[in-house]
Structure formats: structure tokens, C-alpha cells
Image 1 (cartoon, one colour):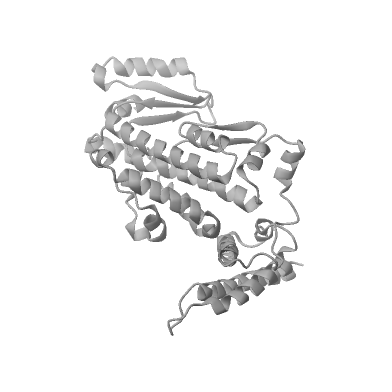
Image 2 (cartoon, rainbow, N blue to C red):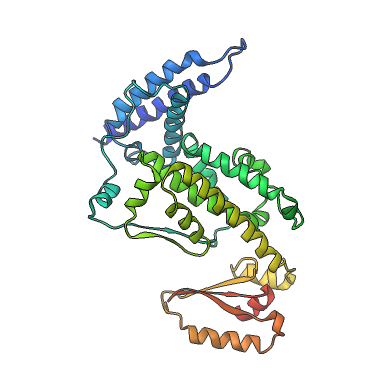
Length: 358
């Protein structure tokens, strides 16, 4: 019944709160200066209870699907941190922990050949708060993804501090601090700099993939077999796609992911060198914001709407030619991306694109 389900949810959440308390005690020093290892057996017992009482051989994601969405991340975080703590102290073996007996229906169908999956990684997108996805991923799956994020943080810290990067006024990247201490994180405008957005979006994509194959309990080679239709990407997503398609082992995945992150960092920095920040006329900025178009940038997205969904690129080119007829050669705009029949992107100086938009 609904009342019984509500009771189950309450018990699951309460169990996780107690488990988190035990795990925290087990990983902290005592007031007397000792360690908290005495709490490790309690962590083991409570984790076993959680699995036998609530999971019943199922994956925890299937179970948390039945509780309020706001509670799911904390339950997942607690469970995987507990497993990571027990694994670190070699307490997982022999105590009943194993991969879920009930496999993923989707990946099971892919393995059997009943469906063909295609992995597609996106590009920059137009979400200014993109880093929040990485923050949420890290907080929810810290027990799983921490080794990968830690390595990515070391890689980005090293490259962003190199003299060649500092000569370009690159921000020194302290990813672990940015994830764990929000007050140390750069502002939104700074995070939108391509030498930050490209690698951090890449880290998010690769971290999501890492969490997926770790949670499923498979290696990258097996994971790749699930995507029988292939792996691809849009714009910078191609880099992430190449990294995972080239990886057969977890060691290879780590190595290829670092190469991808480094490539994205330097691509972003070189892009900023090629397209320096321009000061936008205050009147233009005010008009753009008043029309919910955001701050003018060197790229302008044009999309069809429900009344006229199809964009005729020949018509768009006429507008480009008309706009360029009033502009000097170094201020002209270009149709640079055709993302589909309903979406195109123009590039050029922000003020010129503002004129095209009008």
C-alpha cells in the first residue's frame, strides 16, 4: 500500500543516515587521539542490513527510484561512500557484498542484441551554470568517482600553472577545492572562459562514463560492447568519444581521459588567443538582456520555432550577406555551424552578431 511504501522510504533514509554517521566516525580520529577503526564493523553490518533489507539483489538506483527525488542523491552518496570505506580496509570480501543479482534491463538487452545503443557526447551547449552538473555528480558518487576526479584535478592544476598557460593569463585550476568549497569557485563569467569550460565539461562527460561502468561492475571493454551502434560526439564531445572508444582497460581509460582533458584545456586557451574578449557597447548589452538574449558573445544560435520549425540556410545566408555589406572585412559574420534542420550557429564579433540578430 501507499502507507507501507512511505514507511519503507522512511526506513531506507533513516538507515542511510545511521550508516553515514557510522562511516563518518570510522574515518575520523577520536577525541582521545585514536582512530575510528572500531566503527568499521558497524559500517559493515549496517551496509549488509541495507542490502538485504532494501535492495533484495537489485541495483540501488532501481530502489531509490521509488523515493522522493530530493532524497535520492544523499542515499546514493551514503551507500557508495560506505562501500568505498569498506573496500579501502579490505572488508568487502567474504561479508556478502556482490554485484546486483538483477542486471540492468537496458544493458542486458544491448548485450543480447535486442537493442543497439549509441553513445553521444554533447558540446558546449548554452547552460551558464554547467559546473553544477559536475558538483552534483561528485557529491552523489564521491565514493566511486573520487580517484578519477582527483587525477583530473592534478592534470589540470599542472597544465594551467605552466608558464605557457600563465603567459595567456589562464586561471590556475584547483578542481578539488572548487568542488568541495563553493566559495573558492570562480564566478560564472570566468567559468565560461573556454580554457575552463572545455576541459571541465570534458571532465564531467568522462566522469559520468566512469561512474556508469564502475556502478555496473564492468571494465571499459565490456562497456564499449554495450554501444554496438558506436560512440560519437558533437563539437568538443568528439574528444570524449575518442577517449572512451580507445580504452579497453581502466588504466587505458585513465590515461586517455587525461590526454582528452589536456587537449581540451589547450584548445580552449588557443581559442581565447584567437578571439580576444571584446567590450560590448552598454546600450547593446542592455537591449540584449532586455530581450532575454543574454550577453552578446562571438557565437549566435538561431533556432526554428513551432510555427516555422525548418530553417532555410539559403535565407540565412542572405541575411549574412546583407549584414556583411555594411561591415569591414575583419568585422564580418559567418554561418559557422549547421547543427540540423532547426539549428544553426553564426560566428563573428559580438557587436556584428547583434546587428545580424536585429
